[in-house]
Amino acid sequence: MAIPVFNGRVAPVFDWAHQLVVVDYSAGTELGRQDVALDRLSATKRPEYLRALGVDVLVCGGVSNELLALLESRDIRVFAWLSGQLDEVLQHFATSEGRAGPQRSDRAPTDTGSPSSARRGNAPRRNKWRDQK
Image (cartoon, rainbow, N blue to C red; front, side, top):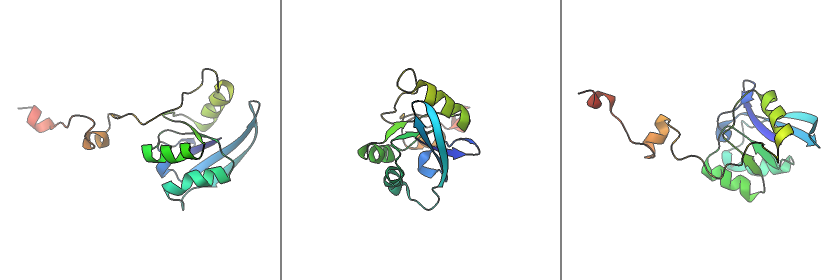
């Protein structure tokens, strides 16, 4: 399992993460961890690199649809839209995967409520100055 991290928390977007923690599990027990730098890898090279590391599950805050498709094409299961401290997410995931754990994300939500989603045309664009008249 791999989790992109930023300041000890699940990184908000896998596409831009600089660090990854790869965790080896067996029967719900953590066997080891490895910190991996992603700085020099483009987003399109990341799925191939994860497979080379033996990763078959990615837990992340978010991931673009394009990168999600590449991950899935390399048989990497993606559990997206999660946040929290790394150790808390690892604990939850290890004890609940396959039962009531996080659900796999098929695609990114179309309207995340962020300004960038509005610019992509997924949410109405508002002009607060015009609306005040």
